[in-house]
Length: 566
Image (cartoon, rainbow, N blue to C red; front, side, top):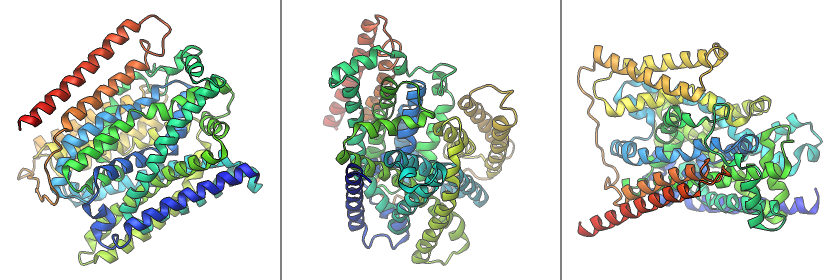
């Protein structure tokens, strides 16, 4: 290992050790109880919620996958990140108040109350299979790939590519699992927040350095080249041949994002630990603002890599690690690697924590009514270890995915995202739909989606995100039909336990309006009337931007005046 690489490694270990020490200090003596371990004692504030949501969601999977998509195609895949802001608004106003009022620890706990224990077990099975076979392995694989590119692990170890990947997966997995196994949700939240600050810093620094390199020392020249040499790379309005066609934003992507931000256990677990509704709303909406800056951190570098290197990489997923390795000096390289690993650990240990929570509280605890809190915590730690070991065997197999990591994860997530959001939405917003409807939907979806993806894939050419929307409509119809023909004997009445303050945040509405305006603004900027065009459409662009600014000012003035009057 040469001097620069050794310094990078040393600085990386130092930063990681500091974050681990602070996380340990903040969690001593607070993870021995059920609520302390699984929900951080219901004491998370907005900053910890937003930071943890950011790092839970943004990992090496996004850093490598999204930049790879921008390198190989264009910015169309930013839809997965940017339109998620809409789902965070739905979470803040529609889902979170109901979750906190019911004081639920897990989503399947709500499903057991709303439907029956069988639906609870079926939903846990969906989550566990999805986490174990897709989500956790993808997080480990993408993080390992980045580390291997950065340190050239095959050369250091003398191993071939695949054995070196397996070794890296195990080392990263064992380190990341320690947070989830020993620290519970609070340790995850604290480390996530600290790593989130570093991710924002480094994530925005890479495109700045990249543009400077593209301009041969001049940032402005690099920006000019980026917007003029290949403007099609900056187009977020995806065509039918792009990874994310624009039309999918208005169909299946809505429901995919609703699943992820409103019903996915490992994401919403942070919000279930909020100390009040207001703090939860602040944290969720803040995470929405982080999502709309993702294209600058996780897609623009991919476009810069195309300008610098051309289309010569064997895999599009190699673009971002190469760019970072070339741009960052040794001391920043260590910090970047620490932050990257922190993001990997965050997503990995969040998934482990949530999977262990689901197993312990929704499968084990119901059959052990007298189990103590200490016993349940011990079971959760054992479950975390078993799930981690299983993921070590699956993660390296993603190396053989030809279509890129990002698309593989999105496709396979379809087995459990749509039925989950259908069941939760119908459970929250209807009173007569019985448990039978939820059971039929789960069985129907897994069967139908499997046939569409693996049996009739050559026949049905409709994009898989559009298939999400069609399946959503069919499954809602199934539940409504069952509710019509065999309704519950008594309407479901939610129990309001009110374990936290349920007063809404007074500025939630104007903040949400500004957030949604930001989504529209991004699509105007990265469109044929914005940066992705050489045509003279600047007047139309300026007019639309002016209208957006005026609407936001009006919304905030009205909110402040209303607050002053009240």
